[in-house]
Amino acid sequence: MEIDIRSFTPDMTDAVGQLIIKIQRDEFELPLTLDDQPDLDDIPGVYQKNNGNFWVAHTRDGKVIGTLALVDLGNGHGALMKMFVASMFRGSRIGIGNRLLETLVTHARNNGFSDVCLGTTSVMPRAHAFYEKNDFQEIDIDDLPEGFPVMKVDTKFYRLDLTS
Image 1: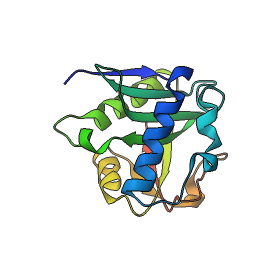
Image 2: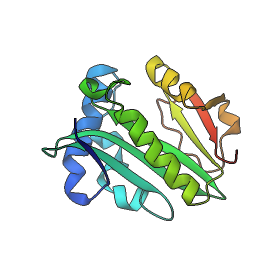
Image 3: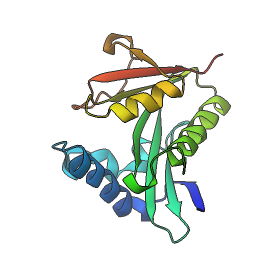
Image 4: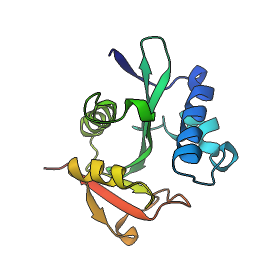
């Protein structure tokens, strides 16, 4: 299957929001709406500043099937945010999550990040396994870098060391 990963452009706003909300509400029963996530109305202003970025995975016909963002927190620290892959495109067979993560890690290394941290919810054990398989280490909330954007549903935190 041919999948393209590109940096976000404003014409993708609605499709990105629909994908993220569908996964949050329908699959994980998280009580979130677009109003709870004003960052999705200003992706360039929130994610695509300094050395941060927001990537979108598309099928050949342009359907948005995945997202991933990197927030530049300064001092070499990054925050991995908004990693979502449509359910029918998950798993190692297709590898969308791996491709999105590889895109982020390559970008972070090329732009001098020393680490990338993330927060997730306890109701996503497959996500935990994915991050752990990709060398993220679980950390305590107190070990997050200054300015890390903790979301109200975050209960588990991870860090990837990019210096080794």
